[in-house]
Length: 512
Image (cartoon, rainbow, N blue to C red; front, side, top):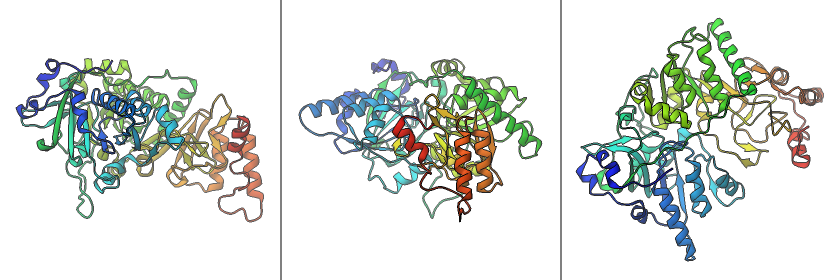
């Protein structure tokens, strides 16, 4: 479990004499964080979240509140952080504003109850919006690193996320040097310092997944570093849900689609195109099935590296994988640390403004595969809001890849909550990805290739191929009546019934 260490545990990681003089406890370091501060912390999923400073900050907030004083911060991150981190700060009412992504039930409830402001944005937009001052100034950055070089450069940890931006823009910086991170990770990172705001932007010279365009370390102004905290704590592990029949069926349809695209001459036969996949057992099942397709030398350009990717790299199916963070189970963490020298040659971790950059995604021709909560019969996708109003997690990077990918695929089981919710509905009550960004929809029942199809043809295909058989008659009936009404238009709908599935669920507990 996470714990602060004595100085002796991590002293070998601080090779700069100037930074060594700033070592202090986490409890001392959080004294530099004040009420109403905007605090940017490292972490992307379970990887690289500060292990000591955040718990110490939560305790300081709790103690301050016990005296009757208010203490909240605005919290900026790479994406989600560990559930423990999110929960610690949320339970003490320590967060006034949260950006850009969360995945913890306590925080989610406060957001949906209107007690915490939440800004849900594309992950590729975060750095630019912070540089432009949309969230005011960043008072303090808390960034986990694996070490500090002799000349004061920072060796990244198991995620990069927005850390480069945090170190650049923050008024003050607290560094956590985590000696649990394998020292051999040094050299796995590619930190690009060539981005700029308009009108000073230049092309990003990344044309292959394996290209390195930056440096292996972060830079930071030593004058801004107010504290160095030494820790020895494991990353939070992403639980690996065993692949079930539904996820395996979805994976089978996707792999058949790849084979079809190869036969049609739209994908290279052996290496396809760079793959991106969201987090979860469906994505793991899709990636895990690639080694049965006879592919070699595949590449991955994504946000995270999951367990299935490690297996593909190890057996040679994948030659190079680029991401901004690791999203591994306990077993995956053990595998990576045991064979870190090997994986360092095949995995590159980059800032998320590069891993999710639309220019690069478009140039490389990324095959984007992301999950969804629901899709409507025309291909509009809701990936964030339950029943149209309650946030689940956030859009994350799915939009970065879906809009700019060579092929955009959305994946989901056809039903949820024991069949009481259909993932295919007449109209989604919240749209994250419009029909223009959705090319392929896949459920366990089949695949709908929407490319080149008009809205009415899309509707027939989605209902017949992707909807659960129990819901198909209801969807066909809705579409048939919508199409038959006078002036049905390009995209027929019955506006009085368009959200009937959702209303029925709210009233009865089932869409049936």
